[in-house]
Image (tube, rainbow, N blue to C red; front, side, top):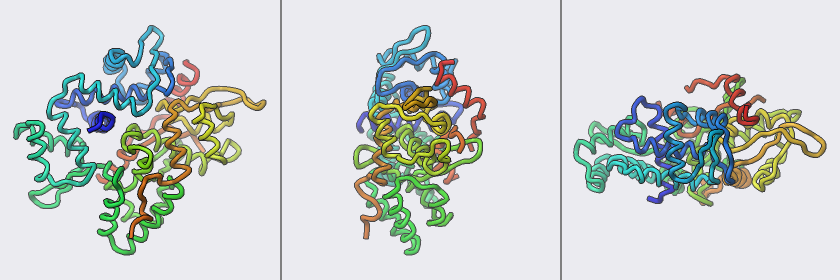
Length: 418
């Protein structure tokens, strides 16, 4: 397994583990994953300085416990020479999403993880390539990582209970393992298998929706449900055929879907969107295009806007910038500041993670930019983002919304340092 892929699985597993009171047996996975999540939150393509106040906000949004976890994670990142601590904050080395994942993998290996932790990553990788039967994988995994019968049983029990993989009982004594990354790569054959399992009328609905996604990259959930019908929509999203993302504000939850393989023509979709940043960006941009009134800065020329950001230039000033991209600020993707341009003054937007903007631009321009698509086969402030895996889990089996005042306080610190 490539190190960057291993890093993405560490992030995946950590997101699962942090919903549990204890990470017993997977401590090294959890520490390395948390370090990677923190590095992603505080870093940009260029080296930057992050004040202690901003650091606390970014760590809090990343679900990192400030008094207990943050000091240890900062020590780890400093040992890796990725940051330099000072009394007023940290200096952060410029890194991309890919290099963040590489560093996450390195941190993990330096911790000398147990065999069962290594096996959990391999198991998740295999279950993302194709669904596998328990009886076909248990003995092989046990032999490769020299697991005892007790540890093998623990691994598969943990995989099911924690969510490293999904388990579908297909008989009294047999289980099928898969996970939500199943359709992020090598999608054509897998999608054909799904189509073959459906009624002809359902096949036509899926093909119609995917043709639309091939042109638009991102569409609203209600639009997709109108095409598929709720029953079929829930069925295919539960297995990960579509990525469901939800951006939220004080007035509404706006849901969007994209194809999981949306970036795989250019790179590894799972790796480049390990932190859900590109999907968050596309969903926020789509929200700005479809929901934001023109009076406050509705996006009219999205290609020009994204191209300007990717070139490293600021865009604005318009009122919507201070409102529609709050979740991207909180994830460290963009920076909002007061500025002037063409005789006007107000909120300006700057892209901190160039590769995220590039992926969003590719998807906006070309829709499904994967090598294969189905057609080849016979407003208010956005303050929260629920990524595809969170929503897929809900489809298979609610987060408390951040209060507006809490969100505004955090954004004030990010923008002004106060």
